Length: 173
Image (cartoon, rainbow, N blue to C red; front, side, top):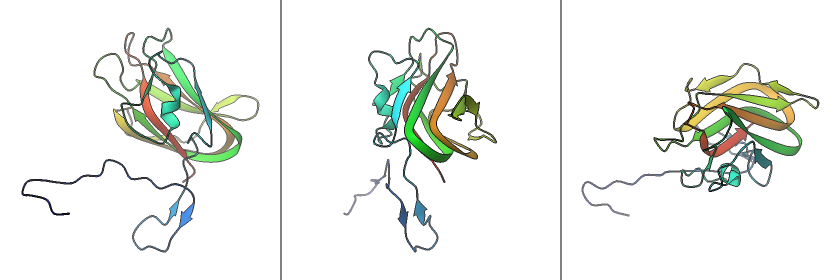
């Protein structure tokens, strides 16, 4: 394809799915599937605005038009939970926060919990990039856990500012 002067091409998303091994120099040679994807986990939430859909956050499409928000939630914090129905190893979460520049913005803070079979526990050694939640992609790594459920808890930014997401991906990198 030939482009005219002043024109450009961009890729907005590139994904690969499933365990793959390849002998390719200078690139990642093993890809791990998204454990949060809809065929691998059921998702639920403490609150969902009636115009949004919780199933958008694990449909594999990281697009702000397909989002889940807690707009008008009566709580200062809310959560989303993934149930894998079997034990999974996880040590990374990719959170894509929505921002409408008004009542839905990235949270003030978030934490990640895992089910140990009897109780919810905070993941250990959590490293957030960036440190404070921002619009679009936020990457969080933590000490490897084995669990059948994981929960992300959000503290909303303000009294009338709520949290929104358009995708969550969970990995064992």
